[in-house]
Image (cartoon, rainbow, N blue to C red; front, side, top):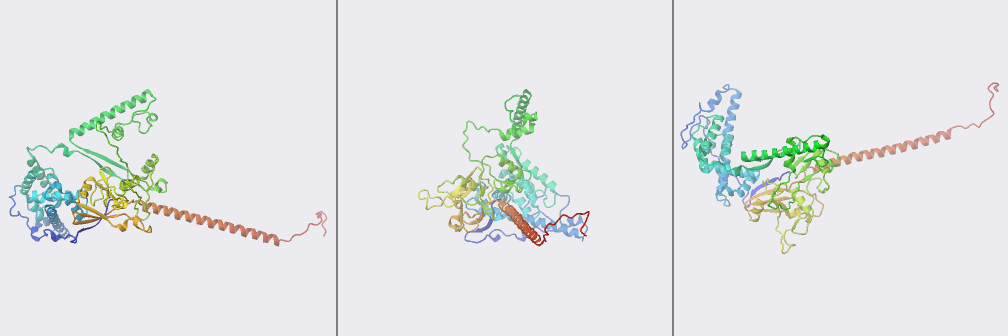
Length: 552
């Protein structure tokens, strides 16, 4: 479960209203009748076959029909959405331009992005992209922005345009803007518009060096399938480098496969190379090239010589419910508190581990129960809990993972000279921040705080432990509140255990009643037998009767 932002406001001034920015005025929208060229825009050099006005739309359907009204309503909705999108971009561009912490430098828009993320209820990365796109659209591409403001440029078309200019310089972007302004955007088809965008980018970048390859290098996890328990590692880079990597991997896999075949044919007593499962001798054949490529990637040692690799505290945290381990149900495990792992994989993983660590959670809220420390550095158990409580950076909107590049941070600063007077090393006073936002907190650009009444150390122990809530001040004006991550499976596990207990209790009570009934039945049978025995008439034995000569 990711962090949840529950409140946004402005310190000392209340909530920001749209009146603080430019209002959406009627003159921003062109008439719905015949779309024309706005004054100040260049003459159209790329024309549509006919104007796309309301008359043209109605001509495509039966006049006066219900479908005609619906088609016209959809067209007007499209224009309204485009105008509203332009209004939001104008607000974002103004926010960025007037932010005193940024001073108009696009690469320094981190604080603006945090404020925007709080207002739009989106991630930090998405907010930064919104700020960048707004600045480019309003400041660098004013001609096409005029079409968007009037409702003549559909919102999705504008997104397409921005995606194609993201790697261009300001001068190149303005050249694309000038080219597209000469296209009859209100009436051309989507196919014509996209062709003109690609042409404009080609013309603007002609004769210029290509984008440096270093900007195109990336490695990321993608295609996470929680049902199958699989994910993909996507490596992006220059074509020559990627093909060279694929070639080296192919050569390595073929070399290992050849060694496996020789070992199996010779019947060598030693281990077979890359026998991951230890069953190649039994199978009698080498692994496939596809399997070997994966095995080499995932099991080879990454050599960083001559750079010394530091000791890494990195661990993959997989939380498995006790009910899943016991086989009572198939509730999934959670990888890093966020990604479900199928029950069968979780049980197999747990069976292969020598050491398990117990994590206690509140059965109602799923909050991780606190542990304590008396020093500046958190204990190993506290660091483990911080990883679970903050799988991503604790700053509202930030989605950076805290597995590696992150810091355990004291919310109230720890006083090294007087440890008893400063912030204590407790889970109530700790959270986990990515390096970038840890530096911003140190610089005073963001400031977190927690309610002391939520500190379990100050309570009486009678209340339910819930996820801790943090109030953030961003640049001393914007406020946002976020809650810690909780174990999503604890309430489910508690319900399963409670249901199993009730079933056991019913079975126990039923067995007790049956035993009581059986005992009562035995007593009744014994009593009835005694009564029958006492009431039976006993006749003393007499002389033997001669059947041949009866006495009568």
